[in-house]
Length: 69
Image 1 (tube, one colour):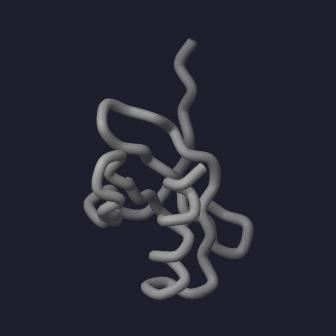
Image 2 (image 1 turned 30 degrees about the vertical axis):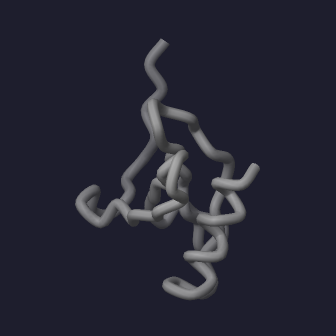
C-alpha cells in the first residue's frame, strides 16, 4: 500500500530506527502505528490525496490498546 511506503520513507528520514505497521483507512487519510524495538512508539497519518504525513505528537506516551466489542 502506498500510504505504508510513504510513512516508512518519512520515518527513515525523521526518526531512524522506527517502522510502521498496517494502515487503518479513515475518510481521506490513513493512520499507522509507529514501532521502535518491537514496541508501539507513536502514531502518524498519511493524507490519501496528497501523501502529506503528520506525526501524532499530541497523544503522549503510549500506555495500552483497549479494544471495545
